Length: 68
Image (cartoon, rainbow, N blue to C red; front, side):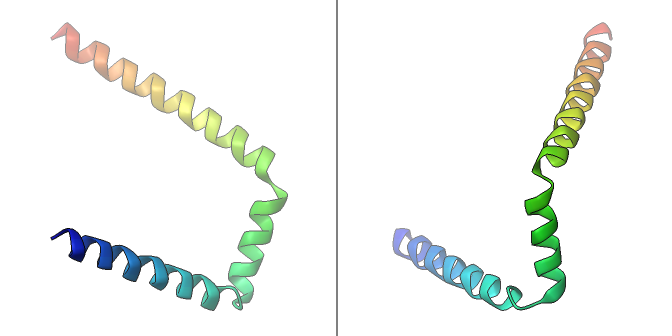
């Protein structure tokens, strides 16, 4: 069973590497990657705000469940 898991890990790893190499020549993927490289500050700010909203929603739901 462990041998099977190791083999599947290698298959998935090399399959992912092959897909990444194929997608490297796609112009839309290149545009997406270049956009991500230009805007890390804006993306981090957006993720931070979403994280705050998620925590607030989770805490409100937790308080409602405890009141019941």
